[in-house]
Length: 208
Image 1 (tube, rainbow, N blue to C red):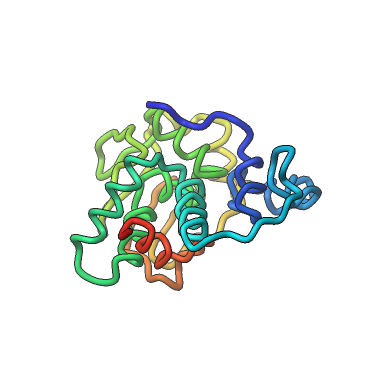
Image 2: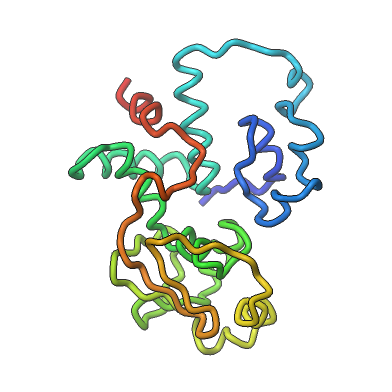
């Protein structure tokens, strides 16, 4: 499957704000958007007023890039959210937050969502005692995510166990760093999701 492999800081500059795609580096002065907060390309300095369609498109692209999801899969999530009970935009964000790669990142077992995706693809995690290597796997309340026994000797996971990797675990998850184990307590509320998007614009974009 095709996936963007270029410089991720370019994506943040295109959206005009930090999407925290490189983990802790995004919180330091080394973040490129701190030095050059203009869109990439030779026309980056040209200021253009966006149409309604442009505003909706940018919100959709921002969400896709924030969670690292391709267009077809993102559209499937929107359709799934529309079929579910509740507010469609909020349900969409809950689905995106329930992805295994996102949960691994939220638990503090990876430096970024891209790093989490790589760790999951390489088969370093179990869900409810079974190996899962699909980053888009959707976890549910009650699911237990833990680092596989054979992976615990990796230097990075040793750093996690020793508290060298800083992370704030949201209230809808519980994490035990020493045991490299986490649990999904419930689905997140909208105010607990820090995605910098207006989900209502995304729903409107797909309703056109």
